[in-house]
Length: 138
Image (tube, rainbow, N blue to C red; front, side, top):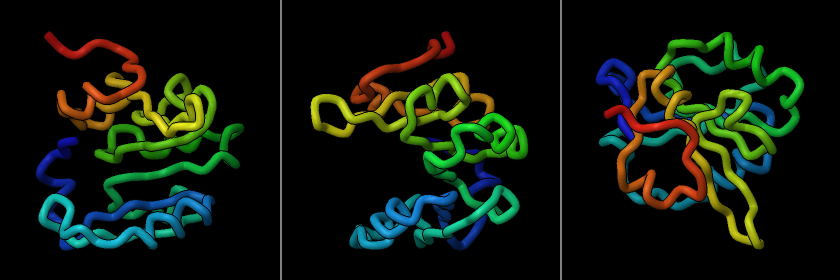
């Protein structure tokens, strides 16, 4: 994943989790493997988009299926990687959506959603995705 330099000009790399305590707790339990993008990683629990602040990643919990499109409109054009784990997440505007396939966690990627946020996805990450929606620029 690549963010524009302005999105990384902060002392912390922030992952905001919108209304999903289990995901936030899992992320906090992960042992630090060093800095991400040479920045300390911080998990921020949020209850609305207003709490997003300068986060580089936003995980939107399943409870927002009915308001998902409206939530994304509030951050349109910002360099935020939107991640979900809900049916139709890519169709609703998520850049990365986690799936359970034959009892294994996989993910799918929307190139268009990533581009709209000003992000680029590496070929290495694309090579392990279960599905890629959209086409890479020529």
